[in-house]
Length: 393
Image (cartoon, rainbow, N blue to C red; front, side):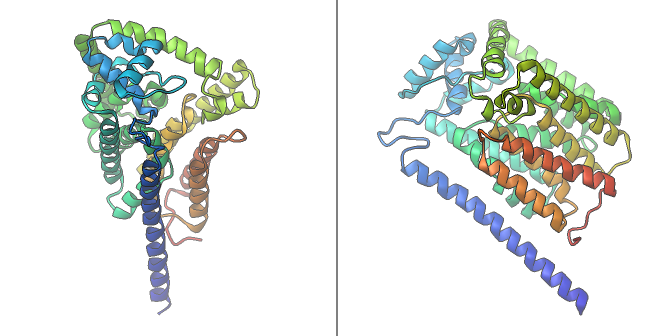
């Protein structure tokens, strides 16, 4: 009788959590719809498109279609094309900062009107994201939880590529043992945002996953060669030159405001630390994370814990990350969720979600702290033998 009561209470608690998560998803949709009707998201009250980060991808696609792919990296030309083609004006710049491997995809977006292209891009990204979540954890509750993760809303608002990053990272890690060729291809595709590939080779080498390494290298080289064959060498030359300017503008001068960077480097710079000190601390963090990943992937640790460690470390290691990139922080939580969460772990998870939902702050790199909390969960699982039952206190 007592056991039946405990199971009933646990089932009731799970149902309550599921309803809360579903309610969050509905709230996100309602918020987006309300901002749309208020004319502050997607389309303004006068019918003109509302410029967001996505306009960078869309304008780059327009330039490729016009036969001027290299001009996507010219800040002035890129902005002029974005405003002219979209029929809207905006201050500042939405620069295109990605290698030409991503530039190859943008013409598909440029073929559509700006608002429709943004919605299509979000739909595509969400679909990939949910496929990756299902590969990790087939339970529908995990799918709802992934959609309720607060960074999902941040990414939807600005039309960024956080869903794609989460999908490639999550799918790649999930398939390392089951489908090494596909895992390698996904990691190769992730090179469109190379700052998120710092620690993946560490895990693959430590775990002896040489086939994954081989397919990842082949995939990355093939993509680069294909982009050069399609677009020519000009965009690659322009990208390298632009990357140096972006580095100076954002990582050296703080052109986007250091408090918006959700990395240890960005947080230290926002506190007034100099570049050398901040880079030294970021480098030390990368070394510590690399050591942890190598240690776990060399041991006979449960795969879910190793996978969660790699996914979390990948996010923490990047010095260049914004709030929308932390859609990917849902990936380690999905891996850990396969064993359920204790009450204490759930409290930490909720705190991490609240921090990400709060967003960038001039006082605290909220997503950085959230990632550290998630890494704490991972380390706790590793030290405890990886099996934390959902009903534990």
